[in-house]
Image 1 (cartoon, one colour):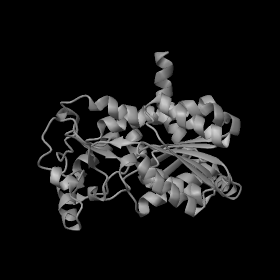
Image 2 (cartoon, one colour):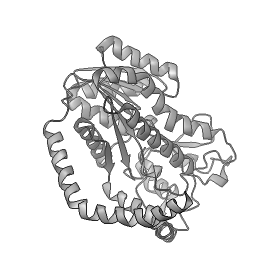
Image 3 (cartoon, helix red, strand yellow):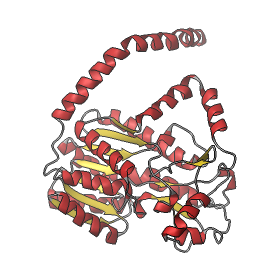
Image 4 (cartoon, one colour):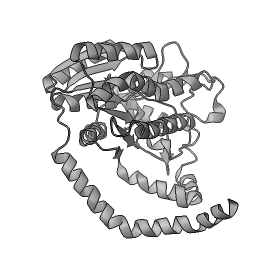
Amino acid sequence: MDFINFVLNLLVPPTSLITLAFSWPALCFLNACEWLYNSIYGEDMDNKVVIITGASSGIGEQIAYEYAIRRANLMLVARRENRLRGIAENARRMGARYVMIMAADVVKEDDCRRFVNETINVFGRVDHLVNTVSLGHTFHFEEVTDTSVFPVLLDINFWGNVYPTLVALPYLHQSNGRVIINASVESWLPMPRMSLYGAAKAALVNFYETLRFELKDEVGVTIATHGWIGSEMTRGKFMLEEGAEMQWKEEREVHVSGGPVEEFARLIVSGACRGDAYVKYPSWYDVFLLYRVFAPNVLNWAFRLLISPHGTRRTSYVGTGRSMDAVRPMLEGTSPSNTHAAANAMAPLTFSGQLVQQKMD
């Protein structure tokens, strides 16, 4: 067996690369034809039923508007019902046939059963389940002193997607529906200060890749992967939890809007209606995957050179046990005069000393 593996190690990689190189033009042509056909004859969402979790802000909110334009029936789910009311009204004005809202926590299986069952009771079906809940962090693993944040991150980023899927799957089978997942480039591209977040997203992607094979073609799975598409922290993507000395980047609780977010939402809904297995924004991040597989050392060296030493130790203090008194005014302040100062003080990651766009989950 060792000899067979030795021979395969020598032959399979170069043979596969050569085959892929010669077949690449034909594959691109076939993919383009498939995209064009699915765009013309894609799924019509008029009067279809869509459940969107994490719909109170950010990507979830914008996805709700995209489905509203397509005249779908919506069930919007988030923890804060007051945020959902305004979004539901906007969705109705944009064309949604009927909009329901429900306050629920997706990390609780009973809550998931409650909003799925209510959807079935009212509409009688579920066509798309869109999971957008996500919770990120920006701290070095060795700085953590309060490990209670670990299960919270895993609960929201993993189980907060799995539980709604488990409950909705029987009804998605009936409608030949689709599950849409909000993943992240960190699921395969390691970035500093995002170790737990990246691990949770990697588990999420692998779970749905496996589920895709188990479901065969009875229920579709669309994995949407994005890079850094937000802007400065001062647009509200970081918040201080009430009564806790930690700050969370939580899309489902913080209002975010802007061109990149809206564009990503459009791509997700369009891709789901076409039946795409993957939606990537921006797609050029895929080049890093080649380096990671065939030249991992080059990728590591490049990141070490690009990441500024001034930016590597700027932390969000999540779970580190450090006092937040110094940064609390910046987190709580909302006046325009504080915007630039707060952005510079709390920049999550810098490249060559410049602020880069914050990852929006």
